[in-house]
Image (cartoon, rainbow, N blue to C red):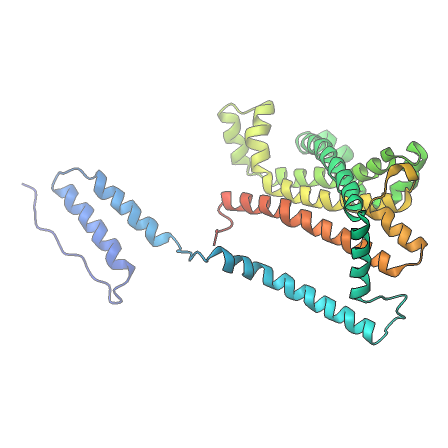
Length: 323
């Protein structure tokens, strides 16, 4: 005959989580001894253990959270503008060499009223987007080949690293000789600047995949293109995204370098060509306005596209908690 005498739960001196865990365990033991259905008790035990391990994150109102995120960069911008204004006020450089913030924003306002500002931005952004998408297609295929085939890695792996460190502006004279003053020259410089970064980022991501993950993929039949799509790329995603971010940075810098030098009336005017026009006219307000636009576009692409994708990937892997 089974004994029905049970021992009461021991209470920890601090009255903390030990009591809850002991009580849950005792209840499960009692139900088991009584021969009843223990599925509900086991579910309660699992829920209790999960609650002990979970961290409660207080969700803030979206307006307060947005303000908390926006405040640090706003403060940094205000500090930079203040230092800039002080340098202008005390004439660290003559005013024609270092215009003040008001002069630069006045130049931007003039371009806006002329209706040409957005066309300058769009010309460069459309070129950068097309060059970057093409670079992603080429760099992804190249990175997978280098990561998977040892002979190819031994042959061109060091070359990719060398190309990544080569300044993009070095390709401009060669591209002009090859393609003349055309859009092909600009896109060639963008590709040569971005593809090595994307390929190397993917190779680094593949190298960080656990061999157990690859073995599990082969076990379930994920081979060839299916293995690349369902196992290799998802597992290498953090490194791949880092490579994409770096590839965009290189493509944007390469584009500006190409636009600075490749200047022809039938090519349209991008931000790099706008910057060169300001230099030719010796108009520092124009030059600084173009630099500011280039900076704003680069930061905007990073914050609006790459930062959300990176946060989503990190959250899906449990590396970032949504607060």
